[in-house]
Image 1 (tube, rainbow, N blue to C red):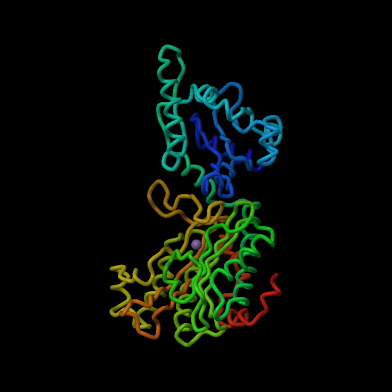
Image 2 (image 1 turned 60 degrees about the vertical axis):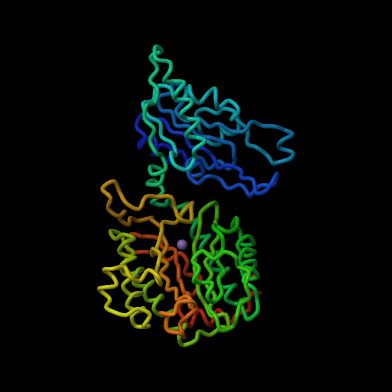
Amino acid sequence: MEIYSQRREKLFSLLGDGAAIIPSGVEKIKSFDTGYPFRQDSNFNYLTGFEEPESLLVFCPQNPEGKTALFLRPKDKLAEMWEGRRMGLDKAKEVLGVDLVFSIHELDKKLPELLENHSKLYLDLFSNRPLVDKALRYLTKLAGRKKSKIISPQNLINLPPLIGSMRLRKDATEIENIKKAAEISGKAHLAAMAFAGHEKNEYEVQALMEYIFKKEGSQGSAYQSIVAGGNNANVLHYINNNEVLKKDDLLLIDAGCEVNLYASDITRTFPIGGRFSAEQKEVYQIVLEAQKKALSQSKIGNTLTHNHDAATEVLVQGLLDLKVLKGTLSEHLEKQSFKDYWPHGTGHWLGLDVHDNSPYVNEEKSDIVFEEGMIFTIEPGLYLPAEDSNVPEKLRGIGIRIEDDVLITNNGHEILTHHAPKEIEAVEEACQKNYRDFL
Ligand SMILES: [Mn+2]
């Protein structure tokens, strides 16, 4: 709990005399009266460690009774019998280390009082409209009391970038969680390589991996698994995962689990029949080399753009060598005329969110520079759709991406997803193993 209170102190220093409200995640209906599994909001978790829905954290540094307040569900014997235990107000105050606790049912009454005498209010302005509307109603009420000498917030400021900047550098516990998630995901990818084969279905491979995610102690997938055989790999967010695999195709799998809400994000591409064909090998080597080039840029002082430029140069030269593109490297780089085959970025921040909600540029609009403790992905790919007549015939239908999770260290970087092989020989070897050894 110490770590959460340190984070709150850090956020206070960024808020100055402003107040802030951070709501928990919301339970979402799947159909009629059945819900999706609840997932706590990442920022709320980052600042409290509290797992329950229907909660709201308030920073109110000008409030004389206490500068942090938590609204949460009160104890309720009947509700708890149906839906599960609640921490309750008294225990929450003791365990979570906040100054004040209130029932969530008192929100309309208490929250406006807590916001008094703050000149500005920080909250998520862009992805939680009901909260913004509610806050505006409270502030309208406060602003109406003109003779009361209460200062009421006159400025609304978007909060997530502030917390996002704190979340850029991971502390030891966060790194440990991501490492654990990466290790479990790596094991699932190894099992998938051993298991996949001719006439198996994509969903069988998905089910095996997600079984391993849970069995090994993660809470499950960090994002929807992509299990894409053959030409399906050329649909970047292919999540249907319901087609039959063919032995001469490749299988692209982008799947990772989360541990204590921290994500891992791995992509591997391997031959369903166990051996790469000459053409598949050729394309694979280009993507692998691009990935290594980007990795070599991953050190303190560089940026994600260094990684992207390094990977792009290798990929575009590869597209020229494969005769998918014609012309010169420099003209394609200048015109960015490779996007049909290399359409996405090389990486993103990784953390509580798989695409971690942290800034990519600073206030001067220049790239965020790598510092020790930052974690991101490196995921170059080449996509050569079966339908594209500009692609040499023997290459059509090949789609390859290789993705690792990378931690910046004081002397370079550490690859957190090293458990899943990516060298051609090691991948082919993994395809020969017995998947039962991973269960
Ligand atoms: Mn990714």
